[in-house]
Image 1 (tube, one colour):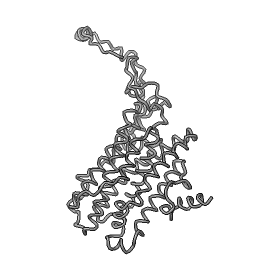
Image 2 (cartoon, helix red, strand yellow):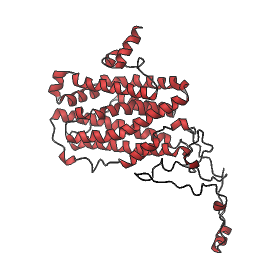
Image 3 (cartoon, rainbow, N blue to C red):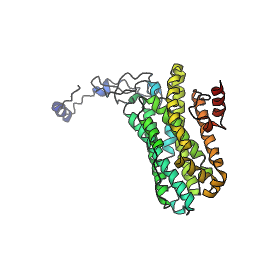
Image 4 (cartoon, rainbow, N blue to C red):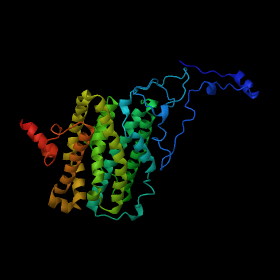
Length: 366
């Protein structure tokens, strides 16, 4: 174990102007390498120059020393477990970080809470149940990266910084939906076992690959589709703005997860079966959401514009949302290089009307 010492003699020498300067004389820093700001300011991409921009495929040390600095041999081992670039990297992570810090918003100031209209009771109840569900789910996407951040090697600082922005984003999402449930007088709705079961599956993931696939690609992807459907679901302009602001954040998280998976598969296609297994499990759990009243009925009421309209239309309005959610999920998997078409673990009745459904049917017949 590394020990520290108090060098009183150094203090006496320094008082006399006898500085050590070993930190300067033995420096291997790239003196003269100057980062030039781009039009938007000094970005992470702008400072990825010289050796400072060389992200190692495997981190040579497990310290918190900034990548590219001189490291004393006595610096202690932190014990990181994610020490390979492929563990956490995506080619878009620097840009996603810059976007995240430039587009922060406030759930207190940037939502016109005073303009929230008084809704019919059925719409208010539906919105509050939906807000409860989203507030519950969104905090998962903060807990998951928080669980893994301290295990990621500091040489992959850009990925760690981005995940920090995700934690802040998701905390804000939980905040804004909790506030929406309380602001209209309806209060919080009901937490249900299927949601909590899926959240537990993600948090219990045995490795970062599994957790990221389940959270970024599946869970957050489904939520992103819901936010995109905000025009259909929002009962007033206030909710429309909430959905739009959350959507811009969620799109970054999904973009990271999609491109991280693509980065992994491009370098080792043999691990595709592992990711298929992760998503098989996740889909089996999450498929119950499509047959759960606390999820289906609020969405149907909001999409139809009221309880009476929903009863007359049945699930026609919410079926549009279900189809969109599944198809956008399949498209994300395609972009990542992991086609799920023909092997989704959703019942044929749920897949009906989607491209995944057609593939499911043909595979089942075969």
